[in-house]
Length: 255
View 1 (tube, rainbow, N blue to C red):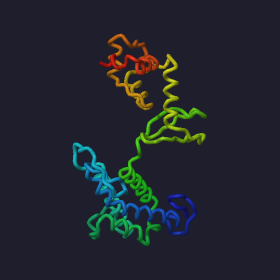
View 2: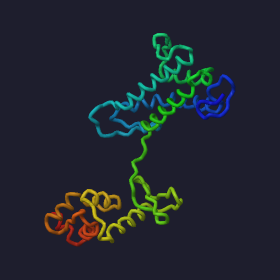
View 3: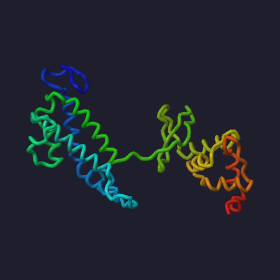
View 4: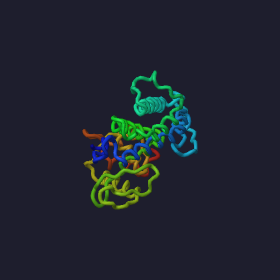
């Protein structure tokens, strides 16, 4: 008989191999640990810092409760209780026969330690569902840092991305480590030293902002209206905007 998760050969009567059974149990226990920070994350006016106990005050949102986290808790609760009914030999959809009064955390812990965790017929299916929920919980508690493209690798020309506070960046292809600011300035030089590079006011503003130069879309359009900046059929030239931005008459031109 093959394991329903990894397809390796397992003992007769087992739906999961020992390794997958252990991973399944550990995931259930990890979700049980995450219940408290998940409930803390319901308050949208606070960012509890994921698994960190430090709270950070954020801007007051239009709704005081994070509805996405509430839906996630509901899905996790329904799945955990359904899993327990399967393990206990009860129809998974017949909630009326489920006499458990324990909360979600206790139910997850009970499922992790159940002797039939690796033997009930749909173990592989529920392991897949629980793993998906665990990934969603991790994203809700510790959202990934917003990263943006900053320029290409000097060695292999691969586009590199970095967070706002990153000082160094490592190329995922060749492994070359480079200073993030150097990559940004090299990209800016490529754009501004080639007069064929064109873009909209918004595109140019974003590209300059990544490199540390601030110029708003409104400023660029104002320069055009005052005859300081030519507009081509495919947009503004990066080099023209750059010359105006670093020119000595910048203060006069934005008044």
